[in-house]
Length: 274
Ligand SMILES: C[S@@+](CC[C@H](N)C(=O)[O-])C[C@H]1O[C@@H](n2cnc3c(N)ncnc32)[C@H](O)[C@@H]1O
Image: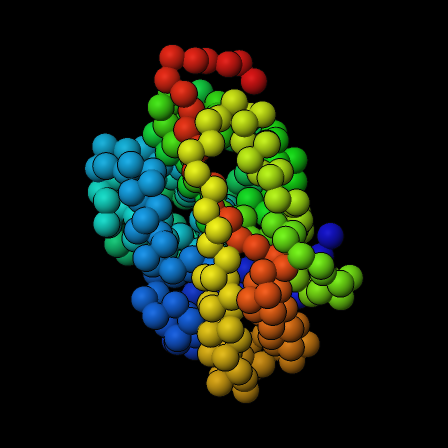
C-alpha cells in the first residue's frame, strides 16, 4: 500500500542536507537525528531505565536514519544493532557507521521487525524502540520475538503515541495515519500484550507532552522553510506533512491521543518457549 504522504523516505534521503538539519535543530533543540517525538533528555532517561552499560548488547527496532543509535553507542559505549525497514534510513545509518568509525560496536540491517528477527535466542541485554511499534502489525507476535531474543533479566522499552484516550474524528484518524500503517490501541492494551508475551511490565509512563510540543515546533520549523522544502518534497507532500503535524499537535495537546513509554523485563530463571 503506498502512503498518502511520505515522511521517512524524504527525511532519511535528505538527512545530511542543511535544510533538514535546520528543521531538526529547531524542532529538538539538541539534534540527535530523530524523526520522532523523543527529546534527547528522554533518550538519556531511557539509557538509565534499560540499565545500559558498556557491556550491553542492544537491539534497536525502527532505528530510522541511525543517528540515535550512534548517540547511544557514543554516550554509553555499548554494542548496538539497528533494524529498520526503510532503505534510505538504513543506507544513511550505515554511512554514519563508516564516517564515525563505529563498525566494531554498531551495525544496521534492513529488516521488517514484524517478521521473525534474524537473531538467536537470548542474544540481547536490551531491546529499544522509539515511536516505531505503532507501524508494525501483530503486536503480540512482535513482543514474543523480543522476549525470545532477550536474555533472562534483559529489558525492553518502547514508546507508543497511538493510545486512544479521547474522542477522535474520522478526519483526524486519517490525517494522523496519513504517513503509513498505524495501529491505534485503547489504554491498557499494550500492558496486556506485554504480559501475554511473557514479559514483566515495570512501568508505563505518560510521555504525551513531548509529542504535543515537538509536533508544533516541527511544523513551525518547516513553515519557515516552505519554499525550499516544496522544491524537494513537492507542494502536495509539504501540505500533507504540515496537516499531519498539526493533527499530532492538536490530538496530543488535548490528550485525545496519548503517547506512553513502556518498560518491561524478561524474568530471570524462567524460559518460556513462545
Ligand atoms: C517515527 S520513526 C522513529 C525512528 C527513530 N526511532 C527515531 O526516534 O527517530 C518510525 C520508524 O519505524 C520504521 N518502521 C516502520 N515499520 C517498520 C517495520 N515493520 N520494521 C522495522 N522498522 C519499521 C520506519 O521506517 C521509521 O524509521
